[in-house]
Length: 430
Image (tube, rainbow, N blue to C red):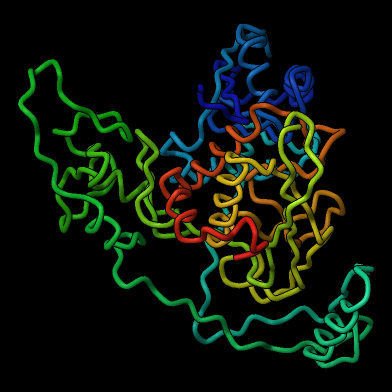
């Protein structure tokens, strides 16, 4: 099956194109537009809530006229583009995917001149002699989750010095967050990843007109990379399993903005190392089997997934370290068919949970509140029927597999997890 994406790249716009309403109106005819990002003077990447919107746009809108120019519209695969990992302009792409009710306000669009001039937010690094101050008040939502949960929130209120959720604590300075440096690093990249998963490249005998290229910088491997070269590494490295070769400086640049020590081959998507995310650690994931069937899967029962979080304090990997995060709209549920493919998906989702990839901390689309637990771009069916994120959908399990693979969770790893946890389906939890 062909690769699918939520993004399209719109090229050949007038330089500094700024008519956001014209752009938004045209692409909204193909699906729900969640964001439009100017990445070059004549190029904008449009993000859709559903992959079908990107497919419709690339099919129907290439050749349309915007600002007097005929534009080209093509699918954009962010994981295949080195700039997605190294260029700050690209870092906002996909920030709303999974927040299905979010529709972009065209007035928030930043044309290229404004976007490129906007100050970039530097990565947050904890200082060893500074404390991160808790916010002066803690307001807990009314969860109304039934008997037993009140004591949990009362205990949390007692922890910060009060009697319950209505207590207004005084500012307290928690212990400073200490960030441990990686054991060894090259330009911020753990060097053990490169040493563990690469070998010096042996150039094959080729004709002068058939020189192998680095697919990151598109230069011949025999030439020097445009990125800064580390003299401690071989100029060109081959990945140990897939054998694809790249400039070592290009691999270092590719990994430099990675939130965890892993490397994903730009050519075949093989993941080296373990990709980890920023899911808060106060959550639980469980599931149960149901006799009822999902639309489109009448020959089997249903697996119902349950996700629950309690409030906590953000770590250094989150947007506002030291501040509280709040689980809005929990508990949440999702559904899988209780068959062979659904069981593989169940194991894949538990792997994603263990690697902290299913959720993150950000802005809630339903309330607009910051510092909330939110989905993290792995799409789940949260309804059994009736609505966009429900069944029937005969391509869903295939698309879910692609979502997981994009985070480095491969079929081989899922098979290994199934062998390690043979009773997971019946146990209801890891």
